[in-house]
Structures are given as structure tokens and as C-alpha cells.
Length: 239
Image (tube, rainbow, N blue to C red):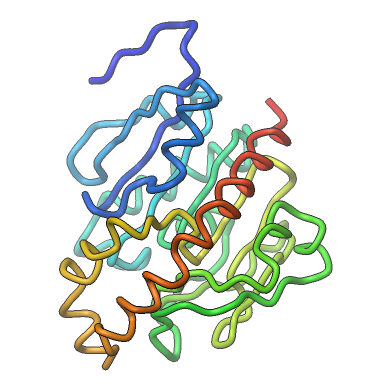
């Protein structure tokens, strides 16, 4: 069990894959005085974090929210997340799989999409998205890496879609933010994704050499804008 002192500013982070970490977000959070506490899904016991007001970030991974027969702890995550979001409105940010878990916790259906969306592409921001923290990403390619999608939760505000999927980002109030794309990626470590996800990339027919070139071209540009997005989200939290 991880222990923290009462005076510390904590960010709890649920991680599904070692190489899908906070990326460029880690530097921003540490500069803001937060102590990062990583929790490994399926390995660590982290029941206490659901009732903590400390912000929570749920990262991405290659499993599906609906695969509870194979990964039974997903049911507990969704149930506890529902309590956290609906009953407490505690600050919570979900990225990729994290966004899908938030959608499921808010009562929306998560399911296999019609196409694997892997690669860099621009978002289509809604009117609400243009006035949200996502305004930092206007006309900027971001990294998409998913094959699942979700219906929009009833209480959510749609912020963005993409070429293949209408629901790429949503918010509930100021505290809950779900991003199906990956704003946190860092150029220097993206090669780990190309190695770790080689089976998925090959099965989807993705040109890894071309994706690597796009990573080198776009990731460094994205980093500054994504960090500004995170800073805005932190500044607007209602705690």
C-alpha cells in the first residue's frame, strides 16, 4: 500500500501498460507540486483512491471495457468509478481506455468500433469544445490509437470527434474530462508503443515506418499544446 502525507498534493494514476504512462503530463504535474502515485490495474489494490478527492487520471491500454469475463477487475473499476463520478464529482481525467471506462461508469455503452483508428489526425471540435480546454488542439494532429468507441453519456457535453468516430472527447462539468485520443505522448518514448503493440499494428495493416515518421513530425509539436490543456483543466477544477 502506498502511503502519503496529509499535506501532499496527490495525483493518483491508474496504469494498464508500463509503457503507456503519463508522458509529457508528468512534468507538468510535478511542476505544479503534485506527487504522482501510479497504481497498476489488475496488480495493485487501490480501493481507497475512489473515495479520495485527489485528482485521478486513468490511462490507456489494449483491453476492452466489456471484457469483464477475461479481466474481471474491470467490473469493480467501473462500479467504483461510478460512485466517484456520480456521487462525488471528484476530479477525473480519462485517456483512451480511461475515457471508455468513464463513459461506462456514466451509463453509456462501450463497444467495438467499425475501424481501427491508429495514427495522427486532427480533431473536429464542437462549439462547446472550442471554448473548452481542448481549444489548445485546434487544427493540431493528435495521436489516435483505438478500435473501441462509446455512446455519449446522457449528462456529458461532447467536445470533439474525429474522421472515423463522432465521440472523441467529452466533459461533465469542470471536473470530469474524457479523451479517447492520446495527448500525453512524448516523441522520445513512442518507439516503445511501436514495439509493444506490434501485433495490433500488423493486424490492423498499419505501416509502422510511416507511423514512426509521423510520430517524429507531430509529437514534439503536440507536447506544448497538450501540456497547456492539462494546466487549464487543473486550474478550472472545482474541489
